[in-house]
Length: 72
Image (cartoon, rainbow, N blue to C red; front, top):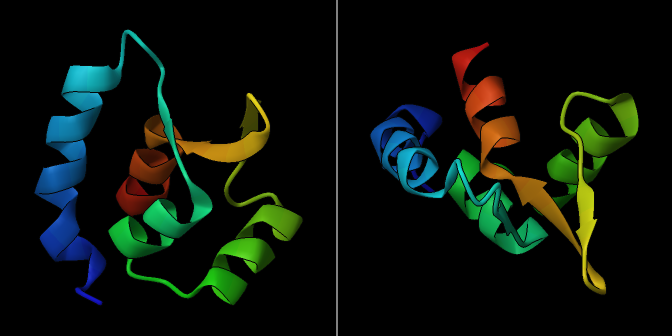
């Protein structure tokens, strides 16, 4: 996985495109974007560092949540 800094510009661009739609990504996609393992993402969710939403049947991570994490 690439470090977060390499993904930062990619995320900013995706957020600019999807901000109005408030789209989310799957947990696997969030892990890839953030450069973290699935277990780390679950720990972040449990600790309230990252929030998830339910979109249909699947939990999603909003791109704005990922950006907030990257910017912190």
